[in-house]
Image (tube, rainbow, N blue to C red):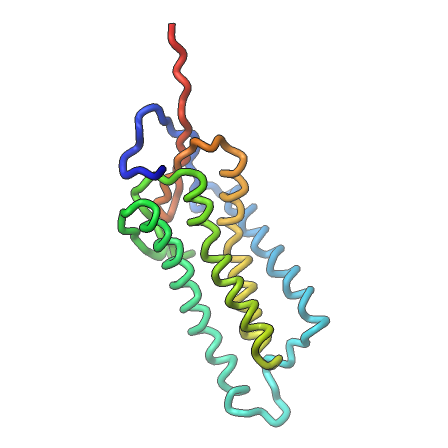
Length: 196
């Protein structure tokens, strides 16, 4: 169940804010770098990076490909957050808010989400984009491999925070509720009252 107002019996268990918690931000950013490095090192032996920028007999597409990457990445960022927001609205009926902190883009909501809903909200963009980019990588000529693989690297490494909170939430009781404002998230647990 998802709620517009925090139900009775819940108390704040933990607040997660990567802008304020420098240790956690370092951990998540380290995970992002690790994912990116592993992905690059995995692909380079099979598809040389030189296929991305052809200097021998370049076509118009060869010249345009690097220039198209930046707008494609910006489109990816916007749609990644839109997907978070789409599922936030789907599960709560509350219109999400979107923003940019200077470090990252975000989607947020005032609603309280149960664990199952929140895991879907957190992982939906990486799953949708991951599937689409993998299809494009295999369907298009090899000269486009790095274009879409760079986007896939950004997709997976950029989701390091989503992976972290998903693993963290999976270890907490099923009855938890999460309110994700976009810049921070509050985790609430059901408190068992003992009668005297």
